[in-house]
Image 1 (tube, rainbow, N blue to C red):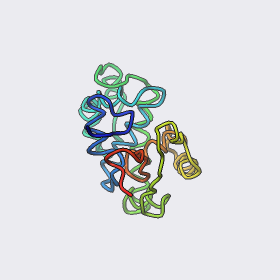
Image 2: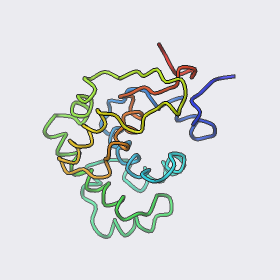
Image 3: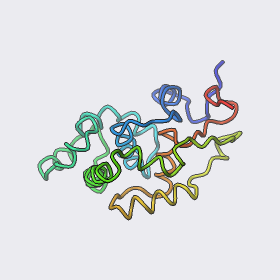
Image 4: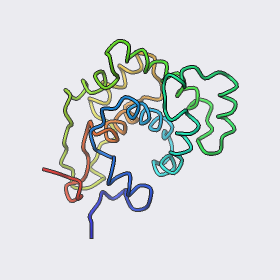
Length: 184
């Protein structure tokens, strides 16, 4: 039997855990996708967002920040009525705002990847936690990332959301040591 991290007990969590979580991600559009999804997850369970991931992709132009940055009130109203996503006005407005800020970061740094990975010196942090309860909700690095993103105008990017983003995009590898995905 394959040993996984405790949170990966049902689909789509199992597939996500096995194929994405903790893998270093450097594609700007995928990084933006996780920024949107982690912000949407605030106050909810990750499984709730994973089950709606395809709905988010469809509703938010396949996570294209250029298209999202141009959303108008008509598109916002459509999103507020879209049952395939979390219909929270603050989170929807945040996704649009963050698309605009994301594009500014790309313009300044060339890519969002170059900007965001500098927080971990461009290499994944590998932790050695024995059980899920050992994992932190945030770290000094996610605090620093959060402050910088907020300074740049992003929202729904608190330290806990930033740490979850870091885990999702492989900036930090938090697979427990008994998990088959943990590599020494």
